[in-house]
Structures are given as structure tokens and as C-alpha cells.
Length: 158
Image (cartoon, rainbow, N blue to C red; front, side, top):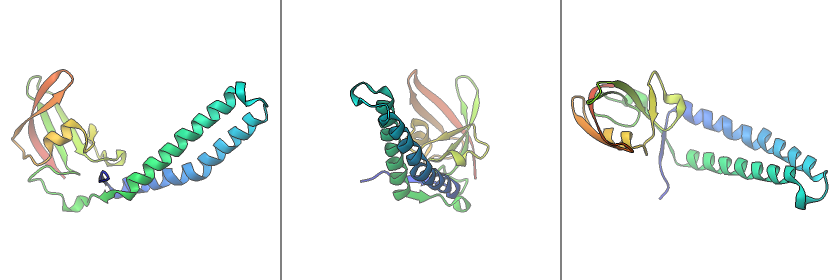
């Protein structure tokens, strides 16, 4: 089953614009690079041709990635968010219990959703997985490379 991507309407628009840019201008730029590299002759020792082909592969991979995201995207209806429980689209204030530092996380899969948050937490991130379904006042534990970190959920915002 394909991964579902939860995005804001703005995030979808940004991806659609990037996709259009890559398909039109990006492909044209790569085509021109390949043509210039081919004009240098012998392909067996043509580093410009090799680089242009690598760039083409990266471009096509990004196009495929964006198309997959858009195909499996679900728009977060930010007007229906509540502050009762953490869900995708929520903005959450958490406090590191050991050090007392507070952070604001926005749970979303697109950069346009930042909306005053310190960090965007993807649905696949350990912090988002730990936060989902919890309420303000609860303590969560997140596994990090340095071990487990405990956070107190101090506030859930829309």
C-alpha cells in the first residue's frame, strides 16, 4: 500500500509548481547540457556527458517522487483541527523534561505548513509518531540517537 501524505493546500500548490518547473524548464536544461556534452565527441571519456546524464537521473527521480506524493496526498483541513488531541496538522508546544527547553512542532509533511513552528515534524518522524493521539499535560518518550528523551506536552494549538 502506498504511503499517504498529509499536506496543506498550500503544500500541494508548491509541489505542483515545482513539478511543472521540473518537467518544462528542468528537462529543457538537461537536454541542452546533454547536447553540449555530445558535441565534445568521444563519450567514453566525456565527463560532461556523464554528469549531464546523472543530473537527468536525479531530475527524473524527483519528478517521480513528486508525482507519487501528489497521487497519495490528502489535504489537511486545518479548520477542522481541535486542541483536544494531537493530530496531523496540529501545532504542539513541548518541553524537554530534563533540560527545560520548549519547542513548537507542527505535524505536517510540507514545508509551507511551518506557520510559526520551530520545526515541521513529518508523519514518519519519531517525534510525530510519539505525539499523535496524545493530549496536553501528558508525558511522551521519544527514542533518539542519544537515548530516550522525555517531553511534556504543554499546549496544543490550531
